[in-house]
Length: 456
Image (cartoon, rainbow, N blue to C red; front, side, top):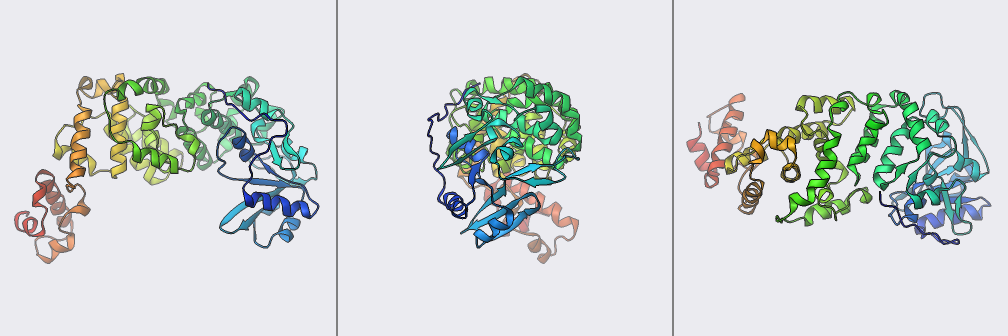
């Protein structure tokens, strides 16, 4: 595990965005306290760019609304008001003490307080329980800076109480460990194992969000924690069948698999840099370079994790997690092809390409390249006889020549076929696919005249 180098100056200043400074300043002018809080402070200390800036304050919700002209009551019953400045929005929340958690997720009530110490005390992990403003500097009452320095995810106070309150924190602990490459504190790990059954009370949608962030992290192999800590039975069916040992093997073989082969990585890196969670993509590793995909392409990661599983099991797992249909469909497509050899033939390659978006096909070839040295791949793909470099070259040639692959690229449409009176109803689809196969073999035949004259 790589420890982080964090800023340690006693009078450390964090560079707050202008809008955050403005919100804090306006609240202070009204006689209230206000701080940036949580993940934005953590990320600033370890050199990451915060995705969001949350603010906590002694001002009551009605005081916040009086202070700012444009607000939205996003969670006012829990003290949260969203302040709008220009095109940006910031959640501003009153210091609070949570009441009893009856559903293992949400407090049944909250009580507002004027003490920031009480507000920080209710938070999940020490690294998320720090606050900052320019006047007071870092407010760190629970050792968050020390845990950042030593690379530890540790609950604030009693870990059993934190997981009793909100079971989703169990998955958040694993996810933060993966994103930051931190260890989970031993007492926190013990409490996770003990409280794992409480995850049954968490919605599958929320579970999927955390699992997706975990597998889109730079350290996908840390998903092993959900097995080692006994979490799997309480989050989804079919998850037991994932071959976790293979993930480490994939990482070890990645650099060797890339040796002696070069292709353009620029577009993939650019995509990763534009993604929501910049910390999730570490391009200096060949493995992570190949896996550098925006969160919206998380099905590439799911397919990696499920390599060797039957497509039906992958679909069932993602369905159980309430996954969206696109993720389910594309993960199944990738998993079906990753361990199926593709013949180095233009027509066959175009057939496979036609099943998926271009980005997904590039992901498939890169996955095959990484997986080519694993035992599962070699057993399924004729002892590794699939010539991946030749497949890359053929694919690049197809792209360079702008050869038609998809139905939408045909020179004719269903309306053209109907107007010629050569087909109707289901017959139109059959003829279109027949035309598609004809131009796969001979791209020069992709003209309206030739297709309508020769395909019946």
